[in-house]
Amino acid sequence: MFALGPLRVERGGTPIERWGGDKAGSRQAQGLFAFLYDRGERGVAKDEVLELIWPDADLERGDLAFHRTMSGLRSTLDPGHRGGSSAAVRFVNDRYRLGRAVVAWSDVDAFLGALDAAAATDRPDRLRFLEEARRLYRGEYLDDCPYYGDSVFVEERRALLRGRFVDLMVAIGERYETLEDRMSAAAAFREAIQRAPAGCPPAVAGLGRLGL
Image (cartoon, rainbow, N blue to C red; front, side, top):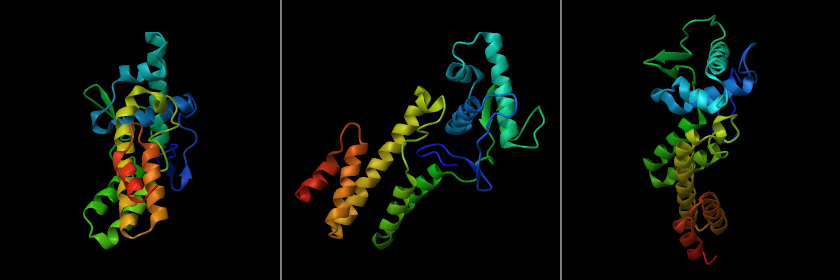
C-alpha cells in the first residue's frame, strides 16, 4: 500500500482499480478503505462513514449504500468472500476495523521504520536511512483519495507525517552540511521550508550558516 502521495494499492504487483465490486461505487469503496486503514484498531462507526460519504442521504438510502459498499470492499479485499463476516473487515463492538493481515506492507510503516533506523544508527550509515525515508515520502498522506483525502478526519495524521518529513529534511541538510556538500544541504533545507506551513527556523538557520 502506497499512501504517501497518491493512493495506490497493489495485490501481487497489480494495482487495485475496481474497489466496489459489481454493485457499489469504486470511489466510495476506496474512500471507505482509506478511512479503515487510517483508523487502525480504533475502528470506524457506520455513522462516521455516512457523514463522510453520504452526508445528504436519508437514513434508509444511506444505510443501503453503506452496506452495499462494505460488501463490495470486502469482496475486493477478500475475493473468496460471499456475504456475511469476513476477515478483511471485522465488525466488533459496533465498529468496523480493517483485518490485521490485509496490508502486508505500507510506505507509511517503511517511512517511519527508516526514521527509527536512522535514529538508532551510527553516523556513517545514518544518511542511508535518511535518504531511504526521503525516497518513500512521495507527497501528502492520502493526497488524492476520494472522499477521505479532503476530509477533516485525515488531517491529524497527515500533519504528523508532514512534520516528520520536515524534521527529516532538516536532518538530511545538517548531515550534508557536515560533509561539506553545500548544494545538497541547501536543497534539503529549502525543501523543509517549503513543506512546513508555519515556517521552519532550523532550516532557515541552516541556510544562514551556508550564507544563503
